[in-house]
Image (cartoon, rainbow, N blue to C red; front, top):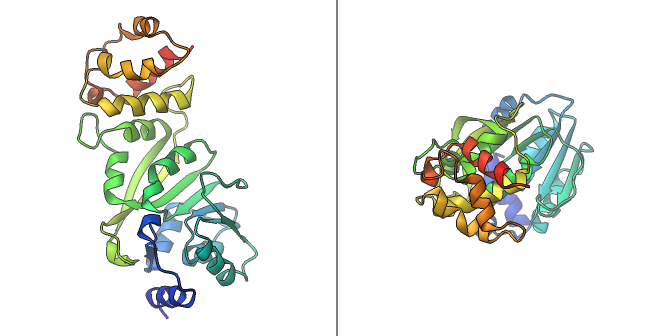
Length: 273
Protein backbone atom coordinates (compact mmCIF):
# COMPACT_ATOMS: atom_id res chain seq x y z
CA UNK A 1 0.00 0.00 0.00
CA UNK A 2 1.47 3.35 -1.06
CA UNK A 3 1.56 6.37 1.21
CA UNK A 4 -1.42 8.00 -0.50
CA UNK A 5 -3.58 4.93 0.05
CA UNK A 6 -2.19 4.51 3.57
CA UNK A 7 -2.98 8.15 4.38
CA UNK A 8 -6.55 7.87 3.17
CA UNK A 9 -7.00 4.59 5.06
CA UNK A 10 -5.76 5.99 8.38
CA UNK A 11 -7.80 9.16 8.06
CA UNK A 12 -10.96 7.16 7.32
CA UNK A 13 -10.27 4.67 10.08
CA UNK A 14 -9.85 7.38 12.70
CA UNK A 15 -12.56 9.60 11.22
CA UNK A 16 -10.16 12.49 10.77
CA UNK A 17 -10.96 15.22 8.30
CA UNK A 18 -7.83 17.31 7.56
CA UNK A 19 -8.23 20.89 8.73
CA UNK A 20 -7.01 23.60 6.37
CA UNK A 21 -6.75 26.00 9.32
CA UNK A 22 -4.12 23.70 10.87
CA UNK A 23 -2.20 23.28 7.63
CA UNK A 24 -2.90 19.54 7.55
CA UNK A 25 -1.50 18.46 4.20
CA UNK A 26 0.25 15.08 4.44
CA UNK A 27 3.31 14.32 2.32
CA UNK A 28 2.60 11.09 0.40
CA UNK A 29 5.81 10.71 -1.60
CA UNK A 30 8.37 8.81 0.48
CA UNK A 31 11.24 9.70 -1.88
CA UNK A 32 11.41 13.09 -0.18
CA UNK A 33 12.25 11.49 3.18
CA UNK A 34 15.64 10.24 1.97
CA UNK A 35 16.44 13.69 0.57
CA UNK A 36 15.67 15.35 3.90
CA UNK A 37 17.91 12.94 5.80
CA UNK A 38 20.70 13.36 3.25
CA UNK A 39 20.67 17.16 3.32
CA UNK A 40 20.75 17.06 7.14
CA UNK A 41 23.69 14.58 7.12
CA UNK A 42 21.72 12.40 9.50
CA UNK A 43 23.59 9.72 11.44
CA UNK A 44 23.01 7.21 14.22
CA UNK A 45 24.05 9.64 16.97
CA UNK A 46 21.59 12.42 16.14
CA UNK A 47 18.52 13.44 18.14
CA UNK A 48 16.03 14.81 15.63
CA UNK A 49 13.02 17.05 16.15
CA UNK A 50 10.06 16.31 13.86
CA UNK A 51 7.54 19.17 14.03
CA UNK A 52 4.02 18.40 12.86
CA UNK A 53 4.55 14.63 12.84
CA UNK A 54 1.09 13.99 11.37
CA UNK A 55 0.54 10.30 10.62
CA UNK A 56 4.13 9.38 11.45
CA UNK A 57 5.50 8.34 8.06
CA UNK A 58 8.51 10.67 8.22
CA UNK A 59 8.93 9.94 11.94
CA UNK A 60 9.24 6.20 11.30
CA UNK A 61 11.76 6.78 8.53
CA UNK A 62 13.89 9.04 10.74
CA UNK A 63 13.80 6.52 13.60
CA UNK A 64 15.55 4.03 11.31
CA UNK A 65 18.44 6.41 10.69
CA UNK A 66 19.10 8.38 13.90
CA UNK A 67 19.34 7.73 17.65
CA UNK A 68 16.10 9.39 18.81
CA UNK A 69 13.16 11.28 17.32
CA UNK A 70 11.13 13.87 19.20
CA UNK A 71 7.79 13.93 17.38
CA UNK A 72 5.61 16.96 18.13
CA UNK A 73 1.99 17.15 17.02
CA UNK A 74 -0.63 19.71 18.07
CA UNK A 75 -3.74 17.74 17.02
CA UNK A 76 -4.76 15.18 19.65
CA UNK A 77 -6.49 13.11 16.96
CA UNK A 78 -3.21 12.65 15.10
CA UNK A 79 -1.33 11.99 18.34
CA UNK A 80 -3.66 9.05 18.88
CA UNK A 81 -2.69 7.74 15.44
CA UNK A 82 1.00 8.32 16.12
CA UNK A 83 0.90 6.37 19.37
CA UNK A 84 -0.80 3.49 17.61
CA UNK A 85 1.41 3.48 14.51
CA UNK A 86 4.74 4.02 16.28
CA UNK A 87 4.24 1.94 19.43
CA UNK A 88 6.95 -0.50 18.30
CA UNK A 89 9.61 2.24 18.18
CA UNK A 90 11.24 2.87 21.56
CA UNK A 91 13.46 5.58 20.04
CA UNK A 92 10.46 7.83 19.29
CA UNK A 93 9.04 10.13 21.93
CA UNK A 94 5.70 11.77 21.09
CA UNK A 95 4.65 15.19 22.38
CA UNK A 96 1.15 16.63 22.20
CA UNK A 97 1.03 20.41 21.91
CA UNK A 98 2.38 23.54 20.26
CA UNK A 99 6.10 23.14 19.58
CA UNK A 100 6.59 26.80 20.57
CA UNK A 101 5.29 26.02 24.06
CA UNK A 102 6.05 22.34 24.73
CA UNK A 103 9.05 21.60 26.93
CA UNK A 104 11.40 19.41 24.90
CA UNK A 105 14.60 17.48 25.64
CA UNK A 106 17.76 18.54 23.84
CA UNK A 107 17.93 17.89 20.10
CA UNK A 108 20.72 18.67 17.68
CA UNK A 109 18.92 18.48 14.34
CA UNK A 110 15.51 19.30 12.92
CA UNK A 111 13.80 17.58 10.01
CA UNK A 112 10.25 18.73 9.53
CA UNK A 113 7.33 19.40 7.22
CA UNK A 114 5.65 21.96 9.48
CA UNK A 115 2.26 23.61 8.96
CA UNK A 116 2.84 26.65 6.78
CA UNK A 117 1.09 29.08 9.12
CA UNK A 118 3.71 28.61 11.86
CA UNK A 119 6.77 29.04 9.60
CA UNK A 120 7.83 32.51 10.78
CA UNK A 121 7.31 32.02 14.55
CA UNK A 122 8.89 28.58 14.24
CA UNK A 123 12.10 30.06 12.87
CA UNK A 124 12.26 32.71 15.59
CA UNK A 125 11.80 29.95 18.16
CA UNK A 126 14.49 27.83 16.54
CA UNK A 127 17.02 30.67 16.49
CA UNK A 128 16.95 30.69 20.29
CA UNK A 129 18.01 27.01 20.37
CA UNK A 130 21.39 25.34 20.07
CA UNK A 131 21.22 23.13 16.98
CA UNK A 132 23.54 21.87 14.25
CA UNK A 133 21.28 21.76 11.22
CA UNK A 134 17.62 22.06 10.25
CA UNK A 135 15.97 20.86 7.05
CA UNK A 136 12.41 21.92 6.33
CA UNK A 137 9.83 21.62 3.61
CA UNK A 138 8.52 25.17 3.34
CA UNK A 139 6.09 26.94 1.05
CA UNK A 140 8.09 28.14 -1.96
CA UNK A 141 6.95 31.75 -1.65
CA UNK A 142 8.01 31.76 2.00
CA UNK A 143 11.56 30.74 1.06
CA UNK A 144 11.77 33.76 -1.23
CA UNK A 145 11.34 35.91 1.88
CA UNK A 146 14.20 34.12 3.64
CA UNK A 147 16.79 34.99 1.00
CA UNK A 148 15.41 38.25 -0.40
CA UNK A 149 17.98 40.84 -1.44
CA UNK A 150 18.06 44.36 0.01
CA UNK A 151 15.41 46.60 -1.52
CA UNK A 152 13.54 43.81 -3.29
CA UNK A 153 9.79 43.28 -2.99
CA UNK A 154 10.26 40.24 -0.72
CA UNK A 155 12.87 41.94 1.48
CA UNK A 156 11.51 42.29 5.00
CA UNK A 157 12.19 41.69 8.66
CA UNK A 158 12.43 37.93 8.12
CA UNK A 159 15.29 38.23 5.62
CA UNK A 160 17.16 40.53 8.02
CA UNK A 161 16.78 38.24 11.02
CA UNK A 162 17.52 35.08 9.06
CA UNK A 163 20.69 36.65 7.64
CA UNK A 164 21.97 37.23 11.16
CA UNK A 165 21.36 33.72 12.45
CA UNK A 166 21.71 31.14 9.67
CA UNK A 167 22.99 30.26 6.23
CA UNK A 168 20.14 29.25 3.93
CA UNK A 169 20.36 26.73 1.10
CA UNK A 170 17.43 25.82 -1.14
CA UNK A 171 17.28 22.37 -2.72
CA UNK A 172 14.55 20.27 -4.33
CA UNK A 173 11.08 21.36 -5.32
CA UNK A 174 8.24 19.52 -3.62
CA UNK A 175 5.22 20.04 -5.89
CA UNK A 176 1.76 20.25 -4.40
CA UNK A 177 0.67 16.93 -5.94
CA UNK A 178 2.99 15.18 -3.48
CA UNK A 179 0.58 16.09 -0.66
CA UNK A 180 -2.86 14.90 0.39
CA UNK A 181 -5.01 16.88 0.37
CA UNK A 182 -3.19 19.08 -2.13
CA UNK A 183 -2.27 22.57 -0.90
CA UNK A 184 -2.71 25.54 -3.18
CA UNK A 185 1.03 26.17 -3.56
CA UNK A 186 4.24 24.27 -4.24
CA UNK A 187 6.94 23.73 -1.65
CA UNK A 188 10.70 23.41 -1.51
CA UNK A 189 13.36 21.77 0.66
CA UNK A 190 15.41 24.28 2.68
CA UNK A 191 18.47 23.75 4.86
CA UNK A 192 19.44 26.13 7.67
CA UNK A 193 22.81 26.04 9.41
CA UNK A 194 23.71 28.40 12.27
CA UNK A 195 26.29 31.03 11.39
CA UNK A 196 29.39 30.73 13.55
CA UNK A 197 30.46 33.41 14.08
CA UNK A 198 27.40 35.56 13.42
CA UNK A 199 27.98 38.44 10.97
CA UNK A 200 27.48 41.13 13.62
CA UNK A 201 27.10 41.25 17.38
CA UNK A 202 23.87 42.13 19.16
CA UNK A 203 23.48 43.47 22.68
CA UNK A 204 19.88 42.23 22.86
CA UNK A 205 18.59 39.79 20.22
CA UNK A 206 14.94 40.11 21.20
CA UNK A 207 15.13 43.91 20.95
CA UNK A 208 16.77 43.64 17.52
CA UNK A 209 13.93 41.45 16.25
CA UNK A 210 11.22 43.73 17.67
CA UNK A 211 12.85 46.83 16.18
CA UNK A 212 13.26 45.22 12.77
CA UNK A 213 9.67 44.00 12.69
CA UNK A 214 8.41 47.44 13.68
CA UNK A 215 10.47 49.29 11.08
CA UNK A 216 9.26 47.05 8.26
CA UNK A 217 5.66 47.96 8.99
CA UNK A 218 6.76 51.28 7.41
CA UNK A 219 9.14 49.85 4.82
CA UNK A 220 8.82 52.77 2.40
CA UNK A 221 9.34 55.50 4.98
CA UNK A 222 12.69 57.00 5.84
CA UNK A 223 14.24 55.57 8.98
CA UNK A 224 13.92 58.87 10.87
CA UNK A 225 10.14 58.70 10.47
CA UNK A 226 9.58 54.95 10.58
CA UNK A 227 11.34 54.54 13.92
CA UNK A 228 9.27 57.11 15.84
CA UNK A 229 6.25 54.84 16.55
CA UNK A 230 8.61 52.19 17.92
CA UNK A 231 10.46 54.66 20.15
CA UNK A 232 7.21 56.08 21.51
CA UNK A 233 6.20 52.58 22.56
CA UNK A 234 9.31 52.06 24.69
CA UNK A 235 8.49 52.98 28.32
CA UNK A 236 12.08 53.46 29.49
CA UNK A 237 13.40 55.52 26.58
CA UNK A 238 12.95 59.25 25.97
CA UNK A 239 12.31 59.79 22.29
CA UNK A 240 14.52 62.86 22.07
CA UNK A 241 17.47 61.12 23.69
CA UNK A 242 17.03 58.09 21.44
CA UNK A 243 16.94 60.22 18.30
CA UNK A 244 20.16 61.94 19.38
CA UNK A 245 21.83 58.53 19.54
CA UNK A 246 20.96 57.51 16.01
CA UNK A 247 20.52 60.68 13.92
CA UNK A 248 24.17 60.67 12.86
CA UNK A 249 24.02 57.23 11.28
CA UNK A 250 24.64 57.49 7.54
CA UNK A 251 21.43 55.60 6.78
CA UNK A 252 19.18 57.74 9.02
CA UNK A 253 17.63 59.48 5.99
CA UNK A 254 17.32 56.34 3.86
CA UNK A 255 14.20 54.24 3.45
CA UNK A 256 13.77 51.16 5.62
CA UNK A 257 13.77 48.76 2.67
CA UNK A 258 17.21 50.08 1.65
CA UNK A 259 18.95 49.17 4.93
CA UNK A 260 21.33 46.22 5.18
CA UNK A 261 20.92 43.74 8.05
CA UNK A 262 24.00 45.22 9.71
CA UNK A 263 22.27 48.61 9.78
CA UNK A 264 19.36 47.20 11.76
CA UNK A 265 21.87 45.66 14.16
CA UNK A 266 23.65 48.98 14.61
CA UNK A 267 20.34 50.75 15.31
CA UNK A 268 19.31 48.16 17.88
CA UNK A 269 22.66 48.26 19.68
CA UNK A 270 22.64 52.07 19.81
CA UNK A 271 19.21 52.08 21.47
CA UNK A 272 19.92 49.37 24.06
CA UNK A 273 21.12 50.91 27.30
